[in-house]
Image 1 (cartoon, rainbow, N blue to C red):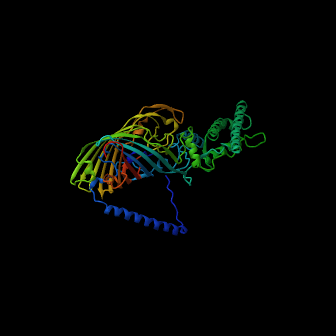
Image 2: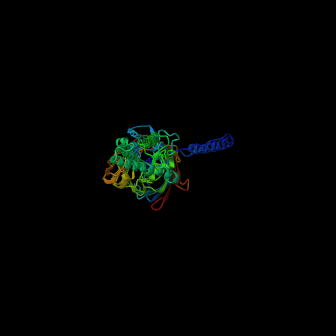
Image 3: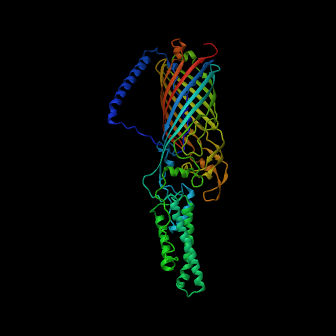
Length: 588
């Protein structure tokens, strides 16, 4: 059977609703009535079969999940299944926490500033100097991200009965994952004060900035020349105020010019129109212009003010979703990641190979199909190697879901069946898995903050935590064709370990040493799931010559009920599996 815990989960979805108009109601009602009648007839047929079929005892029909049975000697069991898993939220970090948070929450920000984009630090420093506001912060706005994840798995399995108590097998999963992403900026400004530099790609606005820079440069040159003249001839016109205020205003001019060039000519972001930073910068430009004209008495050769510009070109709007994605994909100002957008992955998952040995069995094969009643016990041991053939999620995509873990696991299993009379039996399965370590490329960041600059990307040694699982599956058999099952499953995974370090250069140009141990936090996981299913089998009837082909069909629904730790999804899952038996050697 499928092992539902094997799916990956993220990283950081939107679920649309179908509207039904009044004109559509009669047509849909007709379909609903016919569909209901069809379901009712199908159910009546199944009930009739269940009631009228020969009342054979307990294990003529196997159920969902694993058990301690093995494939008979010389028989091959082929299995084909489809599993659809969906989740749009994940559990919190507190043990036993039943609440869940949206998958898109880590990529939803009330404000996008230096905490999210460290490359904004130099811009914030420049703006604080330009405006004189020491507490000024920068904000590109806020984002809203919703993620709806779907994993479709199509495992192809084959098992061979080497003896009546020993079987070997292989499982090859074909996996398609989809992260449906809605990534938007908020409609209101919410304190945003930065936008994309409008002078980039706009010649008129670039000329506006160049005129301001040129006027400030010319004003500084004129003041410097006038200071020199007054130092030579202190009695000259207006030299008293020139010598008193000139040097300080000359320094202010140079400081303002260098700051404006750093922000409006070099930076990808500038203050938005009407923001506190924009108003302050324009005020400072106009105040300096008035000082040159009214205090220092300096004008150009046409008797016009040396500084006549109203100020630099400001941003009209805050960045939209496409602009924010452009920022994220830029390794210099953002993170060098792929855009936050719907992502689909298709490929082979982690292939499993294993063997199963039945060590105790108080029921013969014939007694399994026609039980003598009473209490019976059966136990088996098995081992599985899960190869790292799947593709893990990319360190450069913040929302994708891989087709597998991409690293090898070794898993030991114990299966025990307790048979109570002719109708009821219970399977208890325990698993322990060793997840082997290996080199992998990751972005080093706190797991609660998925954004990390490109300089934090590097190869590290990762040792995923070992895990243990307990599965309890009670089953009730109606007859030789049908059974129903319930299931409770608990999983515990220990903390991951990340070692190694590498050197890099951060957003402000400083050398830093990156240590990946921060990734260990919150990687210890707990999860509980419940499920129910129905099974249909012709194996017993085939053995008695009543049907031609021995096969089994399982339908199962799975839901998470609690969990904790990073990236534990709250899932809903549907599984349909078909198993077909074929004798290739030995006695029938």
